[in-house]
Image (tube, rainbow, N blue to C red; front, top):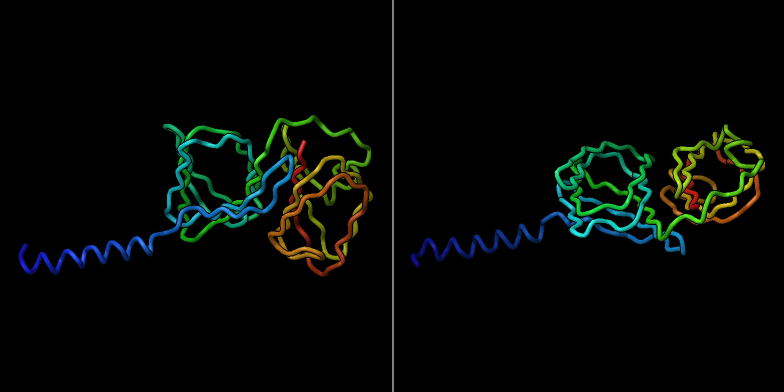
Length: 211
């Protein structure tokens, strides 16, 4: 080995070591809630770092995007480009092996609600369903046999109608509001109440009812 090679080899090893140290981290998983019906996590995807799920995903999920961004998802020979905004909600059924990649120039966070089992059935048809009695504040984003997703919006200093919940639900707060901070996640059960936004700012949240 000549002198040039003896000098170049340690330099190359040092460069490779530095690149490994500075390599983008894979998706980071932050547990948020764990209930008999669902497990809730936040997955943070770094830019341009493929996340490979070799075994697929065994559970059905509700995805709530906490940041604006764009990603790709490849499953088998099918690939899709997905653009999303903070507060967007998507249903993702169980699947086989896939690769997801954040192609934005910044990390993106996705709140995932993994359902642990089959639905018990629809809730009773209550005359005090919030969507019926207070459509100004409660709207259905989507519904299937597993979940009903409500988008909740209160203008400043507004009060809602008395309504009733029969299903357990995961609530995600999209901005700071009385009693909660942006990105807080809570679980709530059956309740009959009226709600009020006592602040000078609008209050937005998403409620995922678990059937």
